[in-house]
Length: 404
Image (cartoon, rainbow, N blue to C red; front, side, top):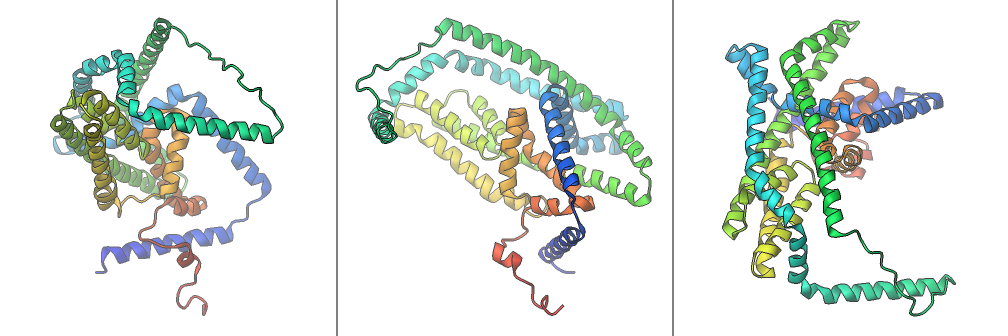
């Protein structure tokens, strides 16, 4: 039996040949291309303006994929009715989230309430940076003056700088409180919608898929629909379960380092690291910044304040460059450029929740493309390489190809 790497290479070569053959046979008319662009724009328009109802449904579908394995254990092995198993899973999920939220809500509220004093403390601790910052600002002003003179727009020397006063602290805090209340009400409503949809997906999702398969016109279409559904469930469930376990280890490691360095509320910062690690690239960078700010406030010297964010960076590099690729490389490969593009797009479209969903949605899109003939070339582009291949090696003919 050939090694796994050779099987992967053969499978990747077969996908490449299939995508190239579809490109050779495809003849896109301008009308078709324009209609496709308008359809994509209409879909994005709907996703943006109907986010209040679509986003909870998408979240419910993703969480349903995450809970598919324990649901199968409860229903198949323990012989519990699907309704009861779904209710137990939702109660467990709600209990875990509620317990963690209750544990971190008090320290989080305390940090938010101390935000003005925190900013003052940070400015005081980073006073040694004022000199370099002022030098950069002076150099920037000289460059702007030079460009203004060159462009002919002479600026009056010594013109007074008009400073627009901001709103009073009390008004700012009042508006912030109103925003938080409105956001909390919207969040509770969407969370209730998601939980309700999740319950019905866990309890009756299989029957919905069975009905969809029954209306397919041919046996090949039925088989393709089942393959897409099973592969989406298997791959996304594996990805979410693995990433959740890895993120849990990252959160525990950061909670431990917060306790070692004497940062207050280590559970809070461990949960922050756990959640931010779901967001590629931007999440860990945000976590490093948060740890640095907290360390500057709490620890006595600036040198000591650099240790927690550096350890955070080391944990992220160990996880992102070694553990996660080693676990998921053979099963779940996506193009890093498109992962970053998907992150920015869904973050713009749906905010933080979109950033959380960016990679699972890209993976679902790739799986669908791999099983739909017209979209096979797009699926090949979205997928990451099984091994390092340069552009030159991708365009050079294989040995013997010129003789064919």
